[in-house]
Structure formats: structure tokens, C-alpha cells
Image (tube, rainbow, N blue to C red; front, side, top):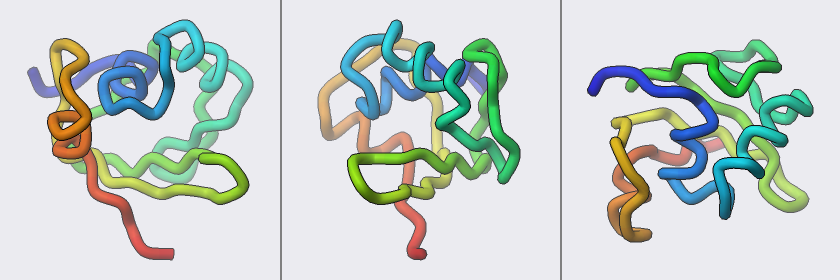
Length: 86
């Protein structure tokens, strides 16, 4: 798999607990893909993209390393991205 929906990726990478929450987060404009605000949960995401999102009181920037077909363990989820220094 080379690309996936942004809401599915957020769920598989364990940034949200449910896919519905991921859809709400994206629809609310709280996620940026390569610097541009994303408003639709169905937007495609591929390895190499930079994703910026709020996590608690901080802003987190991650590089997408891989996409997953389904949600796995926390260790598998951490292999999907790398946190970028700010």
C-alpha cells in the first residue's frame, strides 16, 4: 500500500482512539499536511509527507514513514512515523 486516507492513518498510528475522532479532528481543521490545512478526512497521505497536529498543549510535526492496512500494536504504530525536531 502506498497511500491511505489521513483519518485512517491517524487512527492506525494511534494519534486518536477512534477513526470517528480522527475524522472530527481533520474536519475541524486541526491537521496540516505539508504545511496546508486539511479539511477533508478522505485526503490522501503517503510516505514522505509531513503532518502537523496538536497533541495536548504542544504542536507535533511528524514525517510519515509508512502506511498500515489495519491498526496494530503501539510498537507497530511508532514505526509508521518519525517525530521531527522543532
